[in-house]
Image 1 (cartoon, rainbow, N blue to C red):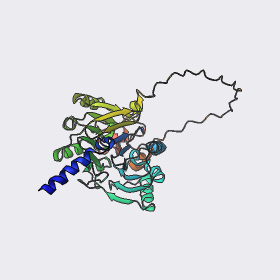
Image 2: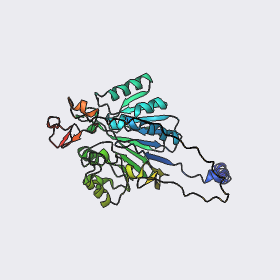
Image 3: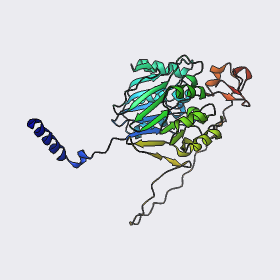
Image 4: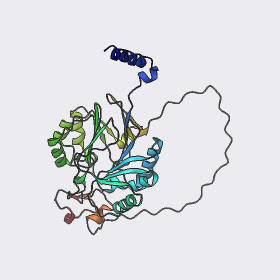
Length: 356
């Protein structure tokens, strides 16, 4: 007994002699970035242990922005890439991302899409020999030993690509994130009936559309922070006022990518903080410090003559499409009644929205 007591005393003494920087080390931080990619989704998770996961990559047009953002955050490789579903506003930028960074694991919804973008993406995954898997409900993603990341919904056999959306809940100690992809209210009902959906941060489904974020669902989640990712002046009317009202009713602080630009939530597992790249659409910059040194006089610049450029003709607006697959190559989320490309025969459920 005396021997064990002596060992215990020695251990306590050794701990007490550790440098303060080690003994009082702050918990590692989790950073979740919601990128401003216009009418689309892209989320970068930087885990406390240093690994990185990208959920969706926005549109092809914004792929360069995604790559630049990842590099600015020190990302050298991606341990996981998740494509929540194969719509162009979620996977369009992933081909550029896969060409820019080594990727270890690719998780897909499994929902087959006939678009060229989806075909090219699968071809590239195969060419680069990236480990490919189809998400299944209750799968765990082993990004970090201090985090729990679970799949709450995935349906490769869904009739609609939005219904196939991978829904993720990521938990770091007491702080959690619920990432809804484009899941609609029916999927929300299924999830909340089976799982604990309460979360600190909610990335609302389908860009703030009124097809998602039902009052019952938001009341169950009770987020402190809500993220609405959508394009400024989009033709879909996102986000709908009812969604913002529901979030306000539960006390959520709402952030919007067109106004706040890139949004970052940082957490030590107990507390969380939100920072944004913009305020009311304008870049947030640190106030300039006054210099006590008189600046050197600027040299007088020679006048520059601008070259004569020919006016660029405006692109024609295409309104005729063979079918929904053809239409989605131009309008990934479909079109509403009243849009020049709307055709009632493509509005299968007669809800006033074709090819959603």
